[in-house]
Amino acid sequence: MALRRFRITALRCIAEAELALDARRNYIYGPNGAGKTSILEGIFLLGRGRSFRTRHVRRLVRHGASGLAVYGEVDDGKRVHRIGVAFTSGRLEKKVDGQEGASGVALAEILPVHTIEPGSHDLIQGGPSERRRFLDWGVFHVEHDYLDAWRRYRRILGQRNAALKASNAATSEIGAWSAALLQAGEEIDGRRKAYVAQLADAFAERGQLLLDSPLRLDYHQGWRGDRTFAEALAESEGRDRAAGTTEIGPHRADLAIEIHGRKVQDEASRGQQKLTAVALVLAQADVLSEARAGGVLLVDDPAAELDAGALERLLAVLETVEAQLILTGLSPQQLAPRAASAVFHVERGHVRGL
Image: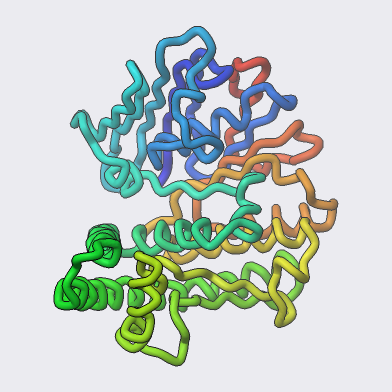
């Protein structure tokens, strides 16, 4: 799978740009503020229907423009898909192979996108919701019907919470929603556990190469490990009634990450935490490549916050990733391009191939 052609219109500082990308390696150079990250942001928008830097798409629109658009041609080895995302008149519109009204899911199925950027650090220092989002995105790309199961669980969870909040809700009503929640939750939990079993092995391997230290990944299911979901939910019902919300379940799950047997948040330096986050992202790309194709890996300024040795290890590991790489850097002297790769230079929002 490769993004062969990519076009930007009116995104941040870039008025117009078109890039013919290499299926394997691509390098984008330029000074800070030139627009390098904006290109990566546009590719992410094309694959996810949102930015990795802001939740507000309107903030991506170039100053003075009425909207923005990104367009790409994706070769999956069998055919070329044409996908696009536009933001006009306050609306985000998506198109896949000429069909308007496409969903973000349809974009993600065609163009899986991973990112390694300063915000990736939130996988380590952020709250559990960051790691759950990362986890669920990974499961979805291995099993596309997982999204339907997750939506079903969330819908039932909302109904149970509404019943818990209602002062006149009958015990039988709460019980009915509890039974439905158990069925949906056990499906979510089972799929996540199967995925994390694959992810943990890849994560340990990538972590050893990047940090020369043993990393461990565990899945915390969202209730006590010595209880089944049914037992935990029954024990929690009194607390749930008092709180008016469901306090245990897959929606409370988390990924626990350890280095040398201790929480990485407590033990590792900031540079080590960044490499730990990188190992997670690369492990996810590894699992995806085994299931179908590794997708596109966007790497924004890998030299930031890493010493020379750590950067050298990272670049060596990136060479082994089965994904289309698109990297940014200040200059070829700082981040040397590999042979047989596409190289671009960005200056004040203008992009040219080298």
